[in-house]
Image 1 (cartoon, rainbow, N blue to C red):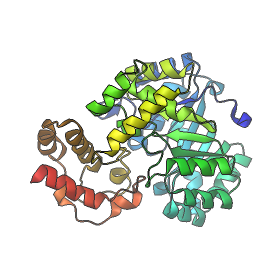
Image 2: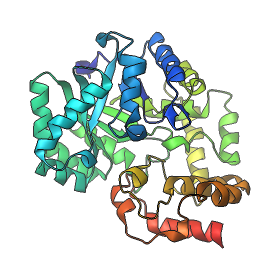
Image 3: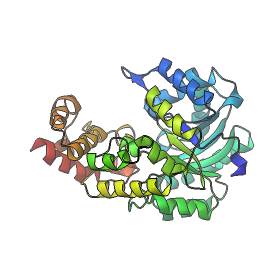
Image 4: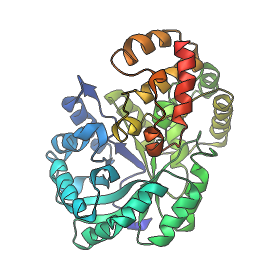
Length: 373
């Protein structure tokens, strides 16, 4: 991984879940988070054109790129399939991303959310070839992919495009042996092709932060770091992983993450044993493994305006904690101005873009039985 030694440390700032006020990015708090991150020796930032409905790139321009010299940070952006339909669309989109971020080049440019369907579209539109050309022109330093599918699909992509330099995957202790996400197997494909790994969703959209009581007692017995610390350090402990991203939403999360990643130490055997026991607790419960990426809303345009991630999160809260306030939130907040789970017309648009490959239509029926019976 010497070719990426300009990345300082193994921890990155994922800008998908920035702090918000009244639907807008909290610029002042984000500036403080950026400053704290850089002050402690980290330099890797990750964004995409669609993050926070297009506001993430603009926030980085205001909070990072206009305030620091270009050599002070590493900036990754992505080419997202929903923003182009033919080869001729890609370069104008790329230029708009550079302008939004306020930079002349990206350190990494990733082919976003690659799976079987997206890969075929990207090939048809010559997206990979365009990205490699942008690298030759100096507009991109390195080309990679972010990946959401089974290991066999990644093997196909890396065999067809050996020029790919780095791979971003979903990787956390709960998905490590998951049959749907296949974190371990996907990681092993990256090792097979000698591709360094970027990690997304190390805390699984926050699901590994607020734990069931039985699981929390396991970590509390260690008297060690935070729940986020165990999850992020688990991912960072693998040798081929170059950066673990954390989508921090406030200064408290930033300070916590920096505290255990500034001088990173992998999990010891006692901590690994605790992680395995926490996995057993999760696997014994009927949880919906949604990471709240919101692709099902922002990429599929649900015709019934159902807030799918909010419903699933509320469902998990009720199942995990026996929180009967979940019924109140379902009826008076989540579905007050949006569709109910029972409104689903089973069109399947959401499932086609779900990185977790969830059977969303069936899960909405399950949620409707829980909250609307």
